[in-house]
Every structure is written in structure tokens, then in C-alpha cells.
Image 1: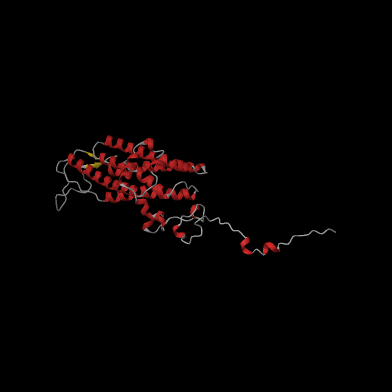
Image 2: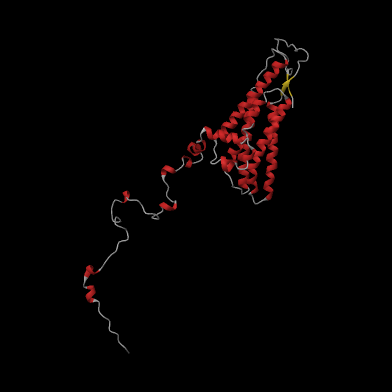
Length: 296
């Protein structure tokens, strides 16, 4: 059996703490107590991993969807941007890239005012066109404004401009297609109806063939714009049958165009045939007799 002599370290231990050396890795100012005034080094904590965010950069709409603050960022857009987004919908060449180029980020201010302006444009233009037709048919004839058309315009425009995109978004979410948000859906649909505003104004001209031409142009421009922005969303679905929804949307587009033409742009000039039928109690003509006749 062999024995190995081990040198005792008593002398090194007796040297005490003076024999130990420590090295700091915190830098020259690492031991300073004023940590709040020192800049944090990269990678320290969670600051550089996105876990912490500056409160000044938090969007105002981070509250619940039932609060006004939630929708405030979607109305934070200037008039110049809204007008540019409206005019761009009239250019078919920009339709395929409209969402990514011009509608980033999406807003609700423009679609709301576009649809509201369209409501008043439909009612005022139809009332003005009917009164002009009545005047040209028989000078001095009075036209009774039908305020029921205003309620019809409100129901029709808001149902198509707001209800249809929301229902479409819900349906696509149910089918597992989540490529866009409900705000983008409403924004695309609202801006897509802008073309009907100038068409409504021009349809005051009492020329039936011109009105049909204007309605056809608006139908094509608005339909192509919506199709170019919606079909890529439908095509991203796993089920190929989802793409067939575009046919249903096209039928709705044709339906809304015919509704506008029949309800608001159907007045034309006719010659007065026969005399007014006198009714007891005044010089008011009997109901159903009018010098302005709707025509498809």
C-alpha cells in the first residue's frame, strides 16, 4: 500500500481575506445606488422583449368594445385621407391593392359619412328630379315631397352598407376565415358605395337612358371594387366552396342597384292627359292621379 503526502494549506488559510481577490462585472458605475437615473443595458429584464410597453404608446382604443374609447382610434383620420380613399374607389386599377395600399389602417369615419351622405343624396336628388319632372310636365303643378323615401333610404343604405359586411364577417369567422377584421369589412363596404353619390346627383337629369347608363356604370365600378377586395379573402379559405359566396354578393349588388333605380331614379317627364278629377271639399286632385309617373 502506498501513501501520498498531501501538503497542508494551513498557511494559505491563515492569510485571511487579504489573500482573496474579487472582480466586478458590473462596470465602473455598477454599484451606484441611483439606478433610476442610469440607462438600462440591452437585454436586462423584459424591457427589450416586448413584455413591457410605454404607456404613452398604448392606443386609446385598448378599452372594452362597449366603451367609446374603444372606437375612438377608428375615427382619428383627417379629411384629406378620407377624400383620397373615396376618390380612389373610382379607379378600377387601384381596386386590387386598395386594402393594403390605401386602407392601412382601416377607419370607420369615412364609411359612416359616405353612407350618410349617400342617404341624403338619394332623397334630395329623387325629390328634386321628381319636382323638375312635375314642373316640365305641367307648368305650375305642385309636387308633394314623399318623406317616406328618406326612411327607405336610411334603412336600405345602412342595412346594405353596415349590416351586410358585419354578417359576412361573422359568417367567415364561423367558417374559420380570419384574414380581415370587422372594421376592415365595414370600411371596404362603406367606401365602395361612394360612387353612388355622384350618380345620384347626375340622375336628376330627366333622361331615362342616361339614368340607366349611370346606374350601370355605378354597378360595375362598385361591384368590381368589392369583388377585388373580398374575393382574395374568400379564396384564402380551405373549403373551395367558400368562394361561391361571391355569387351571392354579386346578386346583392345587382339588387341594390335596381332598388336605387326603381325607388329613387324612376321619374320622367310625361304630358298631362285629361283634367284633374275634382273631389268634394277642395281643388285637390283625386289620389292616384299624378303628372309624374315612375318608370323602370
